[in-house]
Image (cartoon, rainbow, N blue to C red):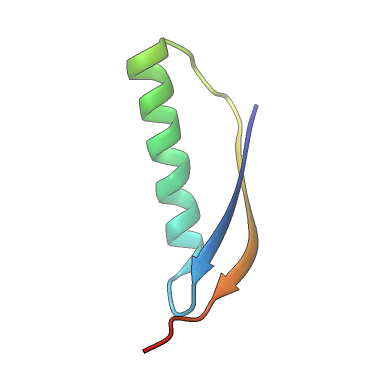
Length: 52
């Protein structure tokens, strides 16, 4: 099991960001370390506003 805590930018689709993070982690663990993660949890800790 892998737990990841992130802060996202306001306006992004959180579900899409979380899915991309999960896919990237799963791919890289398999490719680089030959480890299969059966569960990857993405926890959104906050939303950041961009200052213009």
